[in-house]
Amino acid sequence: MSIRVARWAVAIAIILLGGSWASERAGATETRVRGDFPVASAVRVGGDETQTRLVVDFSRKVDIRAFTLANPYRVVIDMPQVTFQFPARTGERGRGLIKAFRFGLVMQGGSRMVIDLAKPARIDRAFVLESNNEQPARLILDLTAVDREAFLRAIALENRAPEQSYSQRPPPTPDEKADPRPLVVIDPGHGGIDDGTRAASGELEKSIVLEFSLLLRDQIEKSGKYRVVMTRTDDTFVPLGERVSIARARQAWLFVSIHADALARGDGDAQGATVYTLSETASDAAAARLAENENRADAIAGLDLSGEPDDVAGILFDLALRETKSFSMQFARGLVAEMRKATRLHKDPLRSAGFRVLKAPDVPSVLVELGYVSNRGDLKHLTSEAWRARTAASIAKAIDTYFTTRVAGGGPRRQK
Image 1 (spheres, one colour):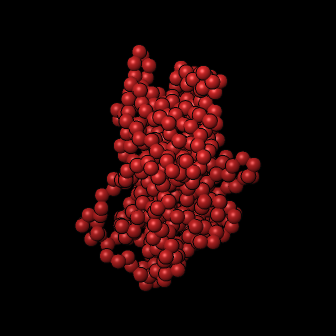
Image 2 (cartoon, one colour):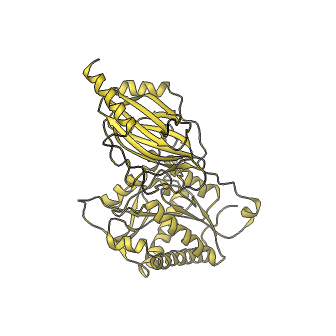
Image 3 (tube, one colour):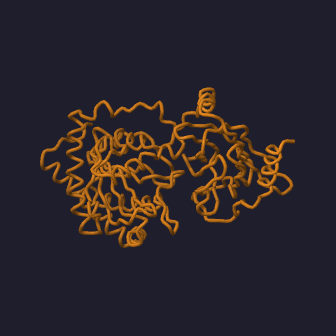
């Protein structure tokens, strides 16, 4: 037996037995799922830059489907809905061919693990062992390094991931279509497998913005003057394009996407809320960075968008989009004015960049960054019930002022 094969065999044995790099089995539940779903309790990675193995312990056997994606190099493992009970920060660092990995609910009834590769690799084996002899069921993924040409050839020969319906949202009912009240779509950013930013103390952007968005929905609906649709109401992943499609299919009058920002260590400090509108040329470098990060949501969830048509690119300078941009800016200015009365704003609170989620050509849209989870003061606000209520009320008031001004000013109504 060669030295390399021997090392590989030893690495496999150590992983299966739970070696020195084994994760603890107990920990915070990262994906908050209810129901009698299989539990993923531990994950281990071992090997080197030539061959790497990942092992996941489950409470019972699950069916899986594994495939690779390029640009960046990734392995995606789809499975039925699973409750992940890994320790906090699991997956932030990998080993060997695995640079990092993430996991979560990608749709109702389905979970996913997305593995970022350090270099091109092929899937040698991907299977799940039955539990036996008091050992849990185990998912085993074996990876071997290959060159880029071989990696791309394998992708071409693979069966691609089956089409999935990420949203269970039904189409508008006749009663909804007949309701003349303006429709506002509230879009809590991230969700499911996509955590968004993370505070040093562990709070996740996806949870912070969902809680705020649900409160904002209630504030808007309280007046009885507007209808509200949420792109998500739980910890589910929704692709960026589908978020836009929800607004367009429902003929929304306004789209408000809710997020929270963060700066990496060493990048200084920033604080306060910011309101963004769409622009193909970012207002500044920070806005460009944020848009680039936010536009990676689909890649984070393991979606292959290489063949997806861009139905917006050809109409970016259409008159309808110019009018939509004008209304977006009108609302953004009013929103900044109202939020200034309720919370601390960023020193440059009105900015623009090429956010994909704002690209509906016929729906005025803004993206609100509520604050920075990397700033202690902002994080304290973001997790404060009093702050959330006050800030949500200011956004609801800005929405009411916008529609009052728009209708009074003779602005175009949504087509029925």
